[in-house]
Amino acid sequence: MMMRTLFVVSLGILLLPGMALSMERAATPSEVELTPSATGQPGISSVGTLETRIYELRYYDGVELADLIRNVTGEQGANVIVADERSNRLIVTAPPEQMRTIERLIQQLDTQAVRGSQVQSLMYRVYMLELPSKDQNLKPFSVLLERSSQLSPAQFMDAIEDAGLQIGTFLQSNEWAGNDKWGLAIQGRAASNDALKQMLAKIPDSQVRELKWDDETFTAAIPAAQVSRLPSQLLEHVRKFLGDEAQTVGYWFGGLSVPGEVKAPIGPWLIEMKAQPGQGADLVLEVRVSRESQTPFVPSAQLLSNTVQGRIGRPVIIGYNRESYGTRVMGAMVVLLEPDTTAPATAEAKTP
Image (cartoon, rainbow, N blue to C red):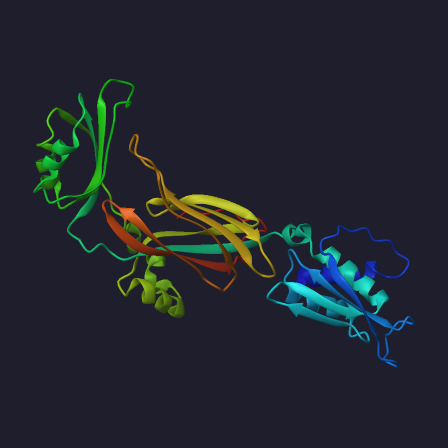
C-alpha cells in the first residue's frame, strides 16, 4: 500500500501543466454526454459545461481506483466519480479540463504492466480434506502381472469371485516391456494378502511383477496438517459439506510470488498452482491436482482442475469427488493465503 501511494503522488507531479506525458491507452470512455452546469459553483470551466464519461476498467478495481483519483485531484468543484462495482466501471462527471486530467490518471493506472510489475510474495497453505472410506478393513492395492497370453473377462470374473475384493481397474496390454508378454494391471481394495493370493491363484500362467499397498491418509499424522488447525469458522463450513469425520489426506505449504507458479507433491498427488494478479486485491489462481501413474499403460488420474479468485484472509474452497480403487470419494481442497513477511520479494516454493 505504501508503494502504491508513492506512485500516485509522483504521477500527480507529472501531470502539472506544460509537461508532456506519454501513455498506453488502457480504458476507453463511452457515450460522452454534455450537461449544462450550475452557475456560480467553484471549479467550473469557463465553457460552462460538464462532461459525463464511462470508463471500462480492465485490471484495476473500480472502487480502489476511484479513491486514488479523488486523493490526487482533490474535491475540485463539480468532479463526481462513481464506481459501478457490478461491471467494474467508473462514471466520471467533470469539467473538460478536469476530465482530461482524470482520464490520464485512468490510462496510467489501469494497465497490466502497473498491476503486474509489483511482485507480491505470499505464503500458501493447502489442505486436501476427504471423508474416510466406509470400508476401513479394505486397503488400496495395485498389482502388475505378466502373462504369456491374454486373460479373458470371464476368467478374471471367476478369479475375483468370493475373494472379498473391490476392483477399480482391470487393464491389459501386449505392448509392454518390449516383448511378446501380456501385461495385466489390477487396482482395487483388499482386506489382506490372503485375499490377493486367492485371486492370483485363479489366474494361471502369471507372474507378479509389482505389488503395492497404498496409504492415502498418511498426512493425518503431521501436526500442521491436522484439520483442527483450520480457522474455526472455516472448519465449520467444511464439516457442513463433508461431515465431522473429514480428515487431511494431503498437505502442502510454501511461498509463491504473484505472478508465479509452483509444482510440488501434496499427499499422494501432484499440485500445480499458478498465481496471477486480478482486479483490486484479488488474485487469480489456476489449480490442478493429478496423480502420475506408476504402472505401465495405466493412465494418469486428474483429481481437479479449477481457476478461482483468492485474496489474503479469504480462504479458497474447491470441492471434488474422485474414483479411488473402485469407490467414489468426496473431498475438498482448502487454500489459505497469508502475507509472507520473512521471504524476499521473489519466494521459492518449499516442500515439507
